[in-house]
Amino acid sequence: MKNSAHFKKLWLVGSLLIPTTIHAADKFKVCADPLHPPYSSKDNSGYENKIATLFAEQLGQELEYFWFPERMGFIRNTLKAENDNGKGYKCDVIMGLPPGSELADTTNPYLHSTYVLLIGKGRGWDDINSAEQLANLPLAKQEKLKIAMFDRGPGTTWLQQHGLLEQGIPYQSMTGDNEHNIAMQIEQDLRKQSIDMVILWGPMAAYVQSQSAPGSYIAIPMISTPSLQFDFSIAMAVRPGDNKRKQLLNDLIAKNQAKIHDIISNYGIISLPIPVQAAPKDDD
Image 1 (cartoon, helix red, strand yellow):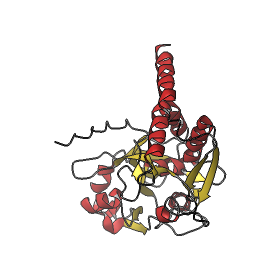
Image 2 (cartoon, rainbow, N blue to C red; image 1 turned 90 degrees about the vertical axis):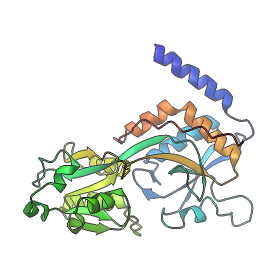
Image 3 (cartoon, rainbow, N blue to C red; image 1 turned 45 degrees about the vertical axis):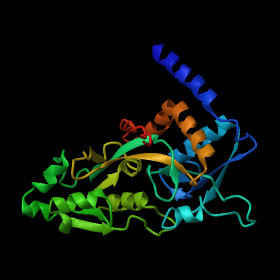
């Protein structure tokens, strides 16, 4: 009862905070990839789709998507792209972007997750219960490793730090494939046993697990160290200078933290406490 009253109070406070400068007649225009599970999809099955639907409903706005593959130039071709008639932009909100992006203005974070070491069971690695065990295996056993290695990311850095680069099977972070994003490609290759394991970002690792029977994988969260970070926050984004919309989103995030957490939990994504952001210092 106490928690229920607490959330009711937060809801009321959040409702009062939502600005009236963006009217209900406006559309909630989202920039999104049409095939990017578990984030977004044209069939609205992604968790970003669910959060966007929640926000649009609370604002009384029509939810509209501008679809574009999330690759190089995504922000330039979506959030910053003007309509063909020169009036307004193709979309106004990106539902998932790391805070502090140089190409957009980001909101407060709504998700904090970590990379996961995902290992297919029944392939000779079922006794692994920590990433460090891989680095300490006998050389003959190490040589049998088939672990996905991306062109960038902390997983590849970890492999390098632990002398396992030669065991890595290279992948591009962006597939360039209209029918598969990287999570879909990794899931297929794990199923075919082209690879046995991967260090994968939390939401994508959850998607891979969701495509197989429960217990098909060993999932080991990667722990950040002073020399290598594995856990990161995710925020939303607007165009630089779109301050009213940014404030609106921040208010909606604050008001709906519990609902957002429930949505993300339904996808099996590891959700860590969101770090407290340092307050900006006043200029002297």
